[in-house]
Image (cartoon, rainbow, N blue to C red; front, top):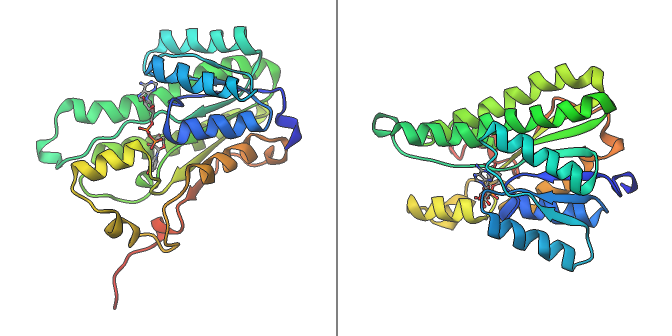
Length: 256
Ligand SMILES: NC(=O)c1ccc[n+]([C@@H]2O[C@H](COP(=O)([O-])OP(=O)(O)OC[C@H]3O[C@@H](n4cnc5c(N)ncnc54)[C@H](O)[C@@H]3O)[C@@H](O)[C@H]2O)c1
């Protein structure tokens, strides 16, 4: 995928976890990578680590939930690295608990980060990509947006919104040469999953039993698909929702 070389990517929520690995894999393809995160120090460290390895990268700390901050962030990316080719909407936030006891905040947070921010960042990106007639938007959804997970109503609903947003925007952007796709990770062992598993008293073995492929996704499984969808080879692939989950979302462990 040589044509990614020298092109500019912005990855949100990229200080750690899946986002940091996406940033590293894209940098390895020769892309110039802007590392966003609300955690400014960690974003700086991730960008420095890429630069120390000989890649061109910069940190653009901001909350992706604020329209003003997002506009400034995208302007900063173009100032520092050049015209934006790829936006990866990866930042995510999770909440869980029974619906009857759920606080307003526990509803709003996933909707702000997993749904509204996808709109705000995509809007700022397409405003710049449309006049250039080209670009890529890749949303990191979740299989939680495709199936029902009890006790995760806000997260599931916010991810479902991001998935349908992907399809709607893909149709609108197709005449402008901009593709919009969504990757839905299954269980991937990151800080987000380990914290939520600990909070809910889940053990790794019972989680693994839910995955026909017998392993969790690796962060690289998602990152390599991002690199493909960002490439010229994928120019006719748009509006697609692709699960990377070892068939987890298809499986119900009921023995009849
Ligand atoms: N880990 C999994 O099993 C799994 C499964 C399905 C989907 N996902 C999705 O993959 C994406 C990455 O997940 P992860 O497991 O690496 O999570 P993570 O919690 O390790 O990383 C998420 C990052 O987003 C950042 N972030 C949160 N709010 C932000 C904001 N307002 N502005 C900017 N940055 C913000 C956090 O600081 C953090 O660095 C998320 O969208 C998540 O929903 C993860």
